[in-house]
Image (cartoon, rainbow, N blue to C red; front, side, top):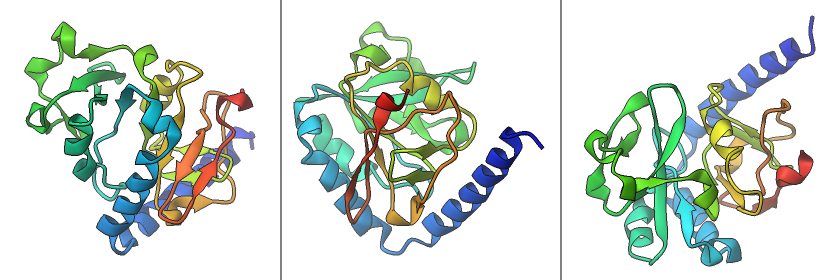
Length: 203
């Protein structure tokens, strides 16, 4: 059996456990408010001019309630959307009305707005990334859904732009199996604490 096979088996186990734990997470709204609140007071967030939010879906940490205030904060807020080739692109969001249900039932920018030059933002222009995920560890190891969309985006972000993951404590594991293409987070924020990850210094 190859080294990759045990890793893939372990990743599948973690995804199953994390999905079940996240689904069973009580008081998601309250826990999400605490998590997002910890993010908003980070010096790294306050210093960032362009912030990439993710728009929550299903049982993820809920970010949508914080978006309207973020849009009024003077920061440039961008959100990802999935193009036809499976890549993520970034969209400058100025109003919640610009979002509609898109691929994988995720709220995404309306199709007619995506190609407007003023709405397109390059990954290297982002000052802080808010990252979703399925499972994490205390080193900042991140496990996504296995499609690699977000990892591709993270590799395009400037090395000095913090990568900050939001997760419920039930999504934390002792160790996430990491492949060479995977990206460690700089911080993982839960409802109980902020973990300092090793970030891209691990590369």
